[in-house]
Image (cartoon, rainbow, N blue to C red; front, side):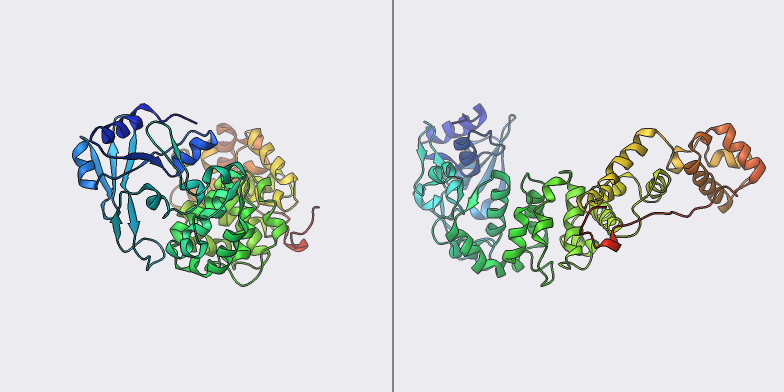
Length: 416
């Protein structure tokens, strides 16, 4: 197994020296058993929180109500939680109260899945009362005890099961899967932020197709209609660039196309994504579902001028996802050409026009006209050339007219 770093071992040693029992627990143990380097370190101890705070020079009371104190060191942080038994979960998220215990197995029994219910002692002894190591070896996600009880305690565990499946490539044990199906209605009690985070982990993993199971199980029913998502399209999400903008755009476009959501923007807003992601992913999805996929470089540059690179890259990724493979190559050709497609790339700016006695809204109109001209004639993006145009022709420079094509007419079902 992976050895914990020195600062973590020092926390364990300090607790032991004061005659307390201390074990590594949770996800770090799972990762150690799998041969992966943990990112977070959690310790379970029979020391009460006030004793933990007294033992270490720097601590943070990150969860005193539930027995958690974070030990702060120069090398890293360690979450230290007192072994506990939990009371009822009336909100399907957190226990109303906890009772401290000294029995490690009782503490491990409250955890979600067997692979997360193992512990390692300071002398590297693995404590595994629920068969977590065996389930890891068999690549199985299995609840500790009764799945219905675990999901009633914290409904997010259902989405976590799918997230672990996506991230680790593990299968969900049939009994646990039946428990998810029976308890899926509880997902509506979860905050949008908690759901969003789990969905994004799945979406940006190597197996985003797991989301099709989440939709079919009803775990996203609070954000979708009764329509059934097209599993074939969701199963192909892994073909899209793993950048979060692109995956959210493709996912929401697939849901919109199948009638599972009303609009990408509405769906992303409901899940409380940040404003930039909503703007970029929703616009990218909508453009790919519209009649505006560019037929040539000029049309591509017009879209870049109007929406920006992030949105149009999303559009191209989604268009490629639905079969318009040349959209990405066309975008890359435009971007690599160095051609001007935005006002900031023009060889002149407002100060040049002011020097020519232009003012007010006229400046914006002239710059827009120059940009339109340069989109069609990229070689003219030179200061002297553009100034000559302004002197001789004012703002009468070129016409707009996109001349694009879209995927909407063929229902996004085939390639061109």
